[in-house]
View 1 (cartoon, rainbow, N blue to C red):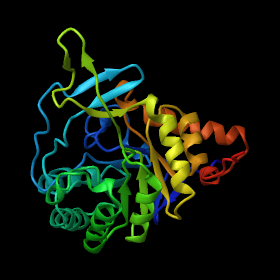
View 2: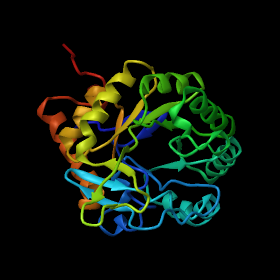
View 3: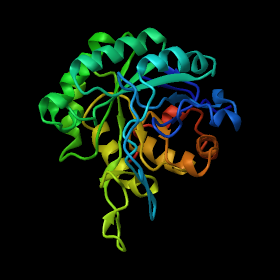
Length: 303
């Protein structure tokens, strides 16, 4: 019997397959297809202190091997999540990860306190949102601001803290080291790559926001490369994500250094994608006589 369980920052997942924040809502729609307890964890929709309507449409644009999105963190706000969604998620039979986005350190603190008290298993800190007190640049683009956001959440949280890294930086390992030094328990990567598409008939961007985040199969090689670099730069466990659509993709990402893997964009095309990835991973392990999924992590043999 193959043991699919993995340990992510002290939290035991029954299998390494997580569903990525912003691609799975709070699980309601997918529960119509299968039992949510089949998943290793659910990373809930990104939360802010106050309710957000997100960006005006159009906010999704298809690309040859993925999608661009500029949804803009549409969510009901942290209080509504804690009161209305957490009771449902707690009954799901899987681990719950809250994804939080703050514009200030005070907001990160408030969010961490509230989701910890609500009983989530892990917090994912989205540092790709703008730091409004420092010119609107994303928290995650500079080591100092990334570390400051991490420290604020760590002080307020009572559960492990995982920081989500942006690929839109010169050197992702520099940010990873800063976040590790600031006390992070785990890292998740990659977030979306900044992209743009233009309607050549109107000469206008397809997205109302002009630019958006690229996700889907196109970004997998970038994600694998960055996970490999980060895994060799820090000692923290990694939740890998970015273009995972098959069991083979998950194996590749784990070999690069990921402890667990999140499936995101693939869920839009096929609600069963996370389970298919899990089953593909299991069949690979069985085929190669590997009794534990955790034995795959960081096993690539570079030239």
